[in-house]
Amino acid sequence: MLSIDSNLPTPATFPVLNLQVHLLDDYLGWLIARLQQQIGTHVVTLNAEMSMMAQEDAALRKTITAAELVIPDGAGVIIYMRLRGRKHQRCPGIELAAALIEYLGTSNPSNSLCFFGGSPGTAEQAAKVWQEQYPRLSILTQDGYVTGVALEEWKQTLETKQPAVILVGIGVPRQELWIQENRHLCPNAVWIGVGGSLDIWAGTKERAPEWLRNNNLEWSYRLYQEPWRWRRMLSLPKFFWRSLWA
Image 1 (cartoon, rainbow, N blue to C red):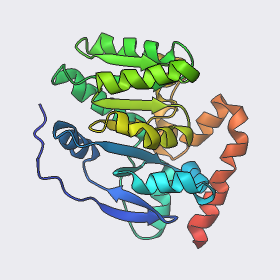
Image 2 (spheres, rainbow, N blue to C red; image 1 turned 90 degrees about the vertical axis):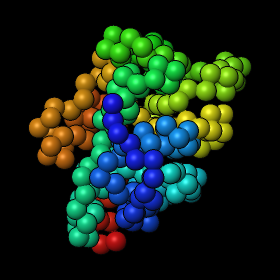
Image 3 (tube, helix red, strand yellow; image 1 turned 180 degrees about the horizontal axis):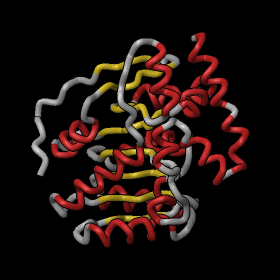
């Protein structure tokens, strides 16, 4: 069992294109402490693509600014900081979310978890994979294609069940905006936008090999898997240019 200091520090921040990234040596420990104290938290996993989106999307920018924890998920964010003299460790959102799941799986079984997102069946398969490792985990699931009356029923389920950790994988920026709009349903929960993590856990997609991740090239593998993303990937050279001159 982890030993968590109940006296939570106020994280320092560093500006990345006017978006404040929180700087912690132990993001997981800080999140667990808030979870234990039932302090609601919105975690934003900031990368270059989201940073550029926020320059044009006022609602997304406002949501990122309001989040209690903005982690440096992308290699571009880390490079931006290093170019300005600040060295910091990257914190991939998928790894932070996985570590939080592992904590829940080995701690109080009353701490329930929620997977929301992906195509029909993806969240359920991801939950099955995790529950094979941690049978005590209680996981609510819902695909990301729910609409209309079913969506309202899903929101009611969240409000009734009050899961401790809610992982939302419905794509950027939709997931960040959805969390900001609906976090009042579970005000004490930790909410994290996890993008395609559910697909990776379910086995329908693969994460980039470690050597690509270690060399800041994870984006290239994502483009290889999803070539339709090429237009969105144009934000990367734009971000790099801004990194040099902003």
